[in-house]
Image 1: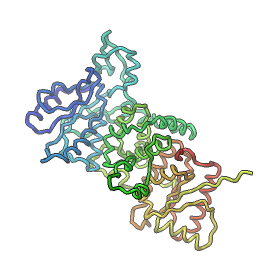
Image 2 (image 1 turned 90 degrees about the vertical axis):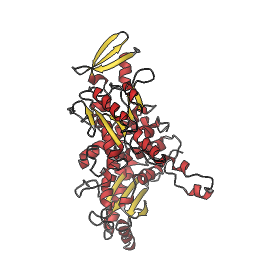
Image 3 (image 1 turned 60 degrees about the vertical axis):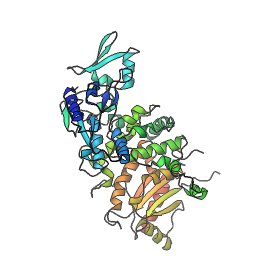
Image 4 (image 1 turned 45 degrees about the vertical axis):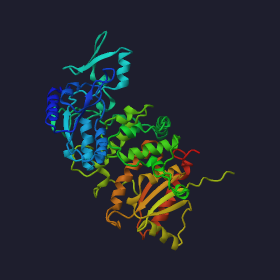
Length: 343
Length: 140
């Protein structure tokens, strides 16, 4: 994995010169480990920045929050925000640029390449450690994770602990950046959509049984929506009922309102919510895996979004998050788009 | 003897072609199964995926979206957008385990009354063996 010493220096300079408003990066978590998002405003705090395989979070979500905050500032601070991004996170920035949600001048991108590794999977790591406490986790030259615990070092090949999405990641380096640390190494992946294909190969009733069981678990906490850098609608279809009620909303108006999705956590309503979310992320999801990571019930939400990424690639030859000048998938078309399913 | 299952189909028909096509079928007194609830929309491109999910949610056994043939759209390119977007919807519905026959799309022009009746006949025939759609239906 790349080192971030050069990026730290860059960050220090940016803050000293006042070129950025603040910098979003990764710092030590509340127990020292694993990493947590860190906001830096003072140059002397730059040393608190860290980079290790537990920097799982996609910090791009904070750019969405920043845009909302900026709207309320008087006068607005127009300086860019510095942000640390991995390969997948940088693709999220590309999509936001594509949709003109942010402008290139709004961000100063400090890119870090995952090189041959990636980030760890919480669950896999916990299993490996079996109760032991990790002090540090690093990647050595032979592409193994070195876990330093109080009882000594454990070496594990990266494949055993990597997050599922990292195993299916084809470009684990930032595609857009102002400064970059690390090499641009493409990983050779045999099956970039292996996890999706596994479900597709099941017969239809088994697929339904699988998804029904998963989606039934949903408690509608909307953590997936909150963590997603692409879920930035001002009013979400699931809470339009709540938002539109004011003191002078008449009973008639309330009764006449369309209830697209009810708010109870019933299986059918959960399913519609997740379908809508998946469709809204079609051609936009960059597979950062945040929805799945934050889900308190471990619903494999990534698999829904990954399916549409696969279809975008296979049906429309569209790769998400590489070219900020490309029109979005569903706001463009080609004359020869497949239509064999249409009568 | 139990009554035969009659599927309920929600059909989103575009105002300029498919809806006119269904009208033609009607005024020409062509016979076709009465299982369809037609909903006129301004363009197949205006059909949000949410309409489709919602129709299933509210008890439709099948959903049909029909628009003008490619190149004939009243709004020049609405049906091209629909084709791309609804392809994704179809793939997604199949992926979560809904029977692929339940969601269909067709191109029907204002002159194709016969094609309209044929599409509905085929659709009903395909839906009958599947029985009622309960997967996405709202649970009371």
